[in-house]
Image (cartoon, rainbow over all chains, first blue to last red; front, side, top):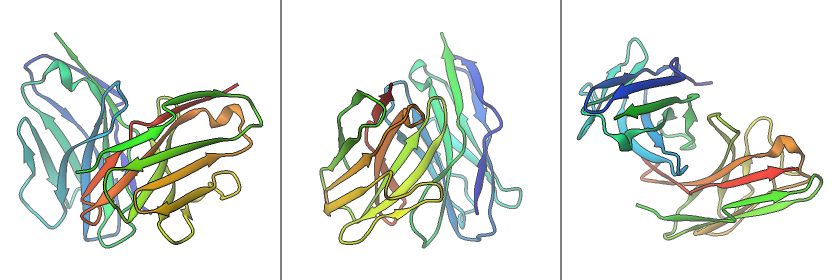
Length: 115
Length: 114
């Protein structure tokens, strides 16, 4: 079974600064996908970024980028130029390729962006 | 993309009663999922609901407690039966597109059992 670990229950950052959220996972699969989801106080889960395990290049979406280290089973999220609207719970998630399309979530990191 | 609505958005229920949560999607999807998010916790998958077949339940969740219907490709319901205060949670439905590469979530139903 796959497990996802987020070791930082809470983090805070000043507006306009950069913050990195950590995620590690455990799997015996070779082909899989990793995701970061954001859940603001409104509760709406929003996909932030996705990484395919077969791709060596780290995914980037505007201010959001990942550092994917397959051998270390590490998948951190970097948020640059943090904005107040980035305040949310961030969940790291794993999905096995070619399977049931089920997501396995970590426990989440609560990020607060301070003005 | 997909737009998902859930009804009700919140409810307060008495112990021993049942509540049915509805999930409506604006496009046809094959796979729908129901998650539970207990206060301050992560999301735990309850079951996968495929149209035309029985739902597939995860370990620790049973059909008698969480019966699911999936009558068509845009709609599903989750019933929380014989509720106890431990069932107080947010219940979210989600849908999968592009073989799971895109998953969209509903706004959730906040259930409080007294």
